[in-house]
Image 1 (tube, rainbow, N blue to C red):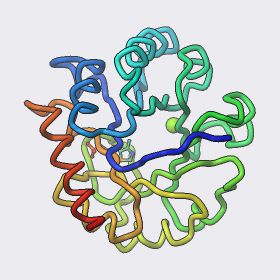
Image 2 (image 1 turned 120 degrees about the vertical axis):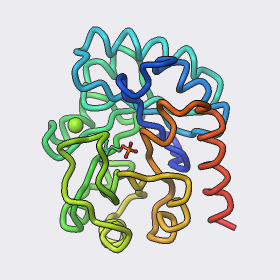
Image 3 (image 1 turned 60 degrees about the horizontal axis):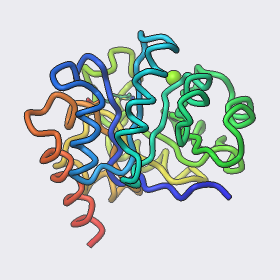
Image 4 (image 1 turned 90 degrees about the vertical axis):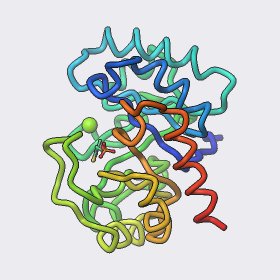
Length: 212
Ligand code: TZP
Ligand code: MG
C-alpha cells in the first residue's frame, strides 16, 4: 500500500538559498510552521553529500508526519531511507525509478506541458510537479512560465494529484488551488526567509483558507 501524500505545503530545499541556517534547520522550522513535504534538492552535492544531509533531515523530520523526498538521486534516496523520489523529464524513466525505490515509496514527476501530464502513468507516479507558473531565479534553466491557465491545463490532463511550482508565494496559493493544485511547492518563499516557520505558516493558512 503506497503512502498517503499531503502536497499542501511542499518545501524544496536549496543549499545556496538555505545557506544561513542550513537545510536541516530550515526544514525543521518550516515543518513546525505546517510544511507537509520536504524535498532535498542539491544539484551539485553528489551522492555522498546528499546522503549525509538526507540522513540528518530524516532524523529531524522523524515523528512530524512530513514526508522526505529526494530529488533525482535514487541511490541516495534508497540509502537515506527517504519516503520518496522526485524526478524530471530528463532523468531516468518512471518505470526504472519505481523499480529502484520499491512499491511503497512516493514518486513525483515534473511535467511542463499538458501532453506530458496526460502521459503520466498513475500506476507508477504518485504526484506531478506542475508549472513553472512564473519565471524564477531559483531555477535558471526552467521552462517557459505557463501562468495559472497553463497550470490548470496541465493539472486537468493529469491522472494524479499536482503540486504547483515556480515563483509562488503565499499570495498565489488561492489561484494555484483554483487551478486544481493540491498544494504549492516553494523554494525562496521559505528558504532564506528571516523566519521560515512563519513563512511556512502563512502558506499553510492560505491553503486552509483556499479550501474553505
Ligand atoms: N522547478 C520549477 S521552478 C523551480 C523548480 C525546482 C524553482 C522554484 O523556486 P521558487 O524560489 O519557489 O520560485
Ligand atoms: Mg531532475
